[in-house]
Length: 86
Image 1 (cartoon, rainbow, N blue to C red):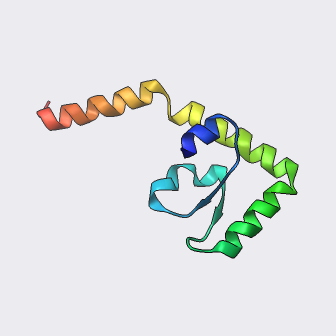
Image 2 (cartoon, rainbow, N blue to C red):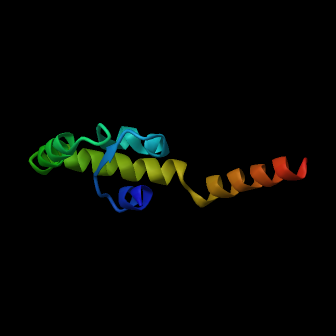
């Protein structure tokens, strides 16, 4: 979901989790299990349109540069090569 949102230009508020490390630089990051931090991040973004626009643009660029069909196919081929011992 995060990559789809970034591609659509939606600024993210996410927690610092291993699964989200690829997009941390393009999101507003809050501590896990911190409702107060989440609220503050949402309010901060909603009142700062320049930051919201900048994060949205940065996220879109990240997805367009790193998560293309070509990179996906190359990664999948590498897995097959490893598994098949080639």
